[in-house]
Amino acid sequence: MDTVTDVAAARARLEEEKTRVRAELGEEIEAPGQMTYGSQAAAAAQVFAQQRDLAFREQAERRFRAIDHALARIDAGTYTVCEICGGPISAERHEAVAWATTCVECGRTHH
Ligand SMILES: [Zn+2]
Image (cartoon, rainbow, N blue to C red; front, side, top):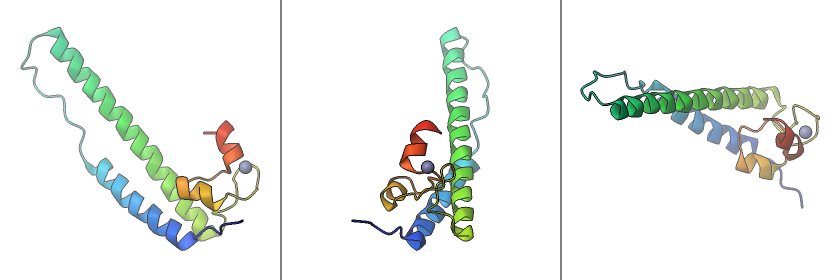
């Protein structure tokens, strides 16, 4: 049985997620503080924390672009059309990943 994609609900979810991700991006990455601990382990831990923050930020930025892109596709009326093969994106897939722009098959091979 086919489930029809609820585009209005998807838009609401995307807007909500966008607000959340924007808030995440708005938070400043902790600036490298003064080295109060002289040990190498403390320095290594700090570098690790910075790299983790950067990776997290990159991920959030990618997510933000994907959400924006999905919203543009809703506006264009192509939200449920796979970007790669032109086939339909199932409601179940959008249920799982609201910003998906490809069908499950294409999503397996393209990221
Ligand atoms: Zn496809």
